[in-house]
Length: 609
Ligand SMILES: Nc1ncnc2c1ncn2[C@@H]1O[C@H](COP(=O)(O)OP(=O)(O)OP(=O)(O)O)[C@@H](O)[C@H]1O
Image (cartoon, rainbow, N blue to C red; front, side, top):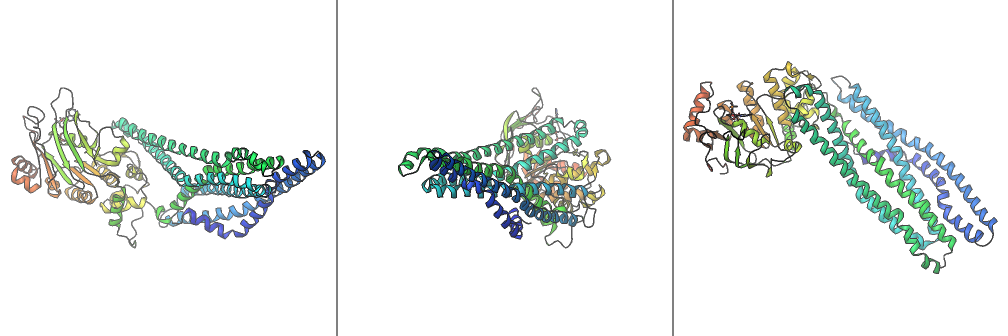
């Protein structure tokens, strides 16, 4: 993909002749800026202060002529600007439409995308034109003022140049951070838009499924994130103010403070006045225009052009329903795994310490003084009779439930008090009844990671053996209606979404109960191979066979071991396996842990070897 720098450099190289014409007319434009101080000094020293007002007026008349020449220069620079900007626009447009068409081979052309890209190209063209004028204006105006100043009074030129260069240096040093903040702002703005659209499109399902509070927290998290990004962007305005103060204003007191010394060196009052005119009429506005112009248009230009060049790359425009290209040099399964790995930024070790949880103030605890440690990358299956507390444990780990006492940590950071956005980055929980909302298949699958490309989704679907499902649903563009899906299809959509999620911890709470054993095995294996930690609340004994370790909650005690180890050591586990083999599910026996016989302190397992 072409970078912004490479693209603009190539464009400027191709337009050398137009640039030279622009430079020539810019010289004419800045004639008054170059002469204003010199002519003012002459008018004052040789004319008005010398008692010869006619001479003074003559010098000012010369300044008037210079202003007229400057006006012609300004007029011509705009004509030259068109010669520079239009080829830039044409080149960019050629690229983005070619990218859109290449992405559409084998499918239809996305008219809306082409229209959107064309509109963005026009925006970039306008900001490019503004940027050229701002940078050119600064170079010529500040250069002319400094040259004029140097020929009028060389020591003053040196006194002024130092703070001007310091101000410019400050601005240049802060520029990368400003670009990063601006990029952050654009991304967060887009994310918020996507989230708002998804929440609005699915609002009926959200209401029906009682997920209003959860979705409100989710959208609220994005709004808070946007506010944080905007605050960070605002601090950049302060940096700009500082560089303007140093480069634009500091030279004035510097020259005034040095005035007695300059007069002793033989500088006349007219020359001193002329020098100040160069500073306040030449250097200061030039610097102001440069800093504000780059801050406004320049940052927008860099970020928008960067995105445009990225999104117009043919790979990113792949048609949602096109199958994976067999000629692709990277193994799709590897690339899909890379997608999952690239997303995982947080650590995945889990730790529960002295956790006690009850559903009501007077209810018996479901978990009492419960400890559990899982190292990063573990694959654990949680088993136990119905009602023993498996889903409760999953909810506590996921941060959906809050323990009355004790702590839960994911990746060394406490779950309690984490924002929904932060929690979503650390873990994903798929309950038995999977959540699917009315919206496109793509939106449903990108719900937890909106920056995913279509290609990444398609590869992941292939990796999980769900390409057929995506095709059956009508492709990524098709609209999903939750009511029109079977429970198994809903689970598969939710599982693919979870696999693509950025969270390093995945908790499947009977999330494959509506699938056949073969599909369940395929999906569980894919999740086990995904980087990070996997917790499965088992629905069949086969899940326990696949896991590295099994956690048995049996009502009084919790045991943690391998499947074979538990078979050998635990009667309760052997009974459970027997029930499973018979195709039934045992119900929690009485007395139960957390009811009449809570789990004794220290009886819960610590998984560390
Ligand atoms: N929202 C709730 N309010 C009150 N009690 C609850 C609530 N949810 C679960 N319980 C109770 O907490 C205990 C543990 O329930 P939990 O759903 O965690 O068990 P489970 O092992 O996952 O069961 P199953 O295998 O049937 O899903 C049960 O006695 C259950 O009745």
